[in-house]
Image (cartoon, rainbow, N blue to C red; front, top):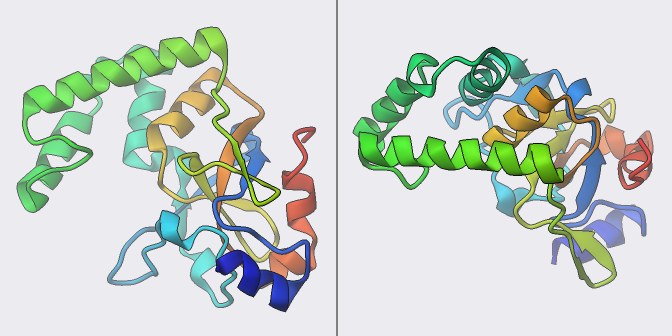
Length: 201
């Protein structure tokens, strides 16, 4: 339905839900501030939404985002996960919510970060996996790293897929597939999507 609504209002080059785009992780510098009390809490169901306003101004430095920062410390500097602060942060959120990232206990957290280590090794050896599927004539990436486009057409990390983003930055990758998030209408006017749909960044 979003595809239809966008096409009616914006033409054939409009954003599409779950659309796959290509981004250069090394060029991203900002992460969207997901704070429901102050900003819209964009999730995957908002993929392809065109939204005006100042939401794109609510950002923070990407490498200071706690999960990304932990990945950079661990994979680039060799800091043990237990010393990155990520375990404590996870436990704080679990205490508040009951669970977080499918974890309920410290053992769950440790097991999760062992899986992150395995993911890093796989990406380093085999490259970043592209799980794009074609639906209704559009390449879509339902579970990809989530990226919004601001009013200038500049990608903003949408804070979903944090560990994959951290790994990509730690490895210095310059082109990975991502799922399109929310798009500022001014980005469409700047034809920003045309470049991001092209793998040759």
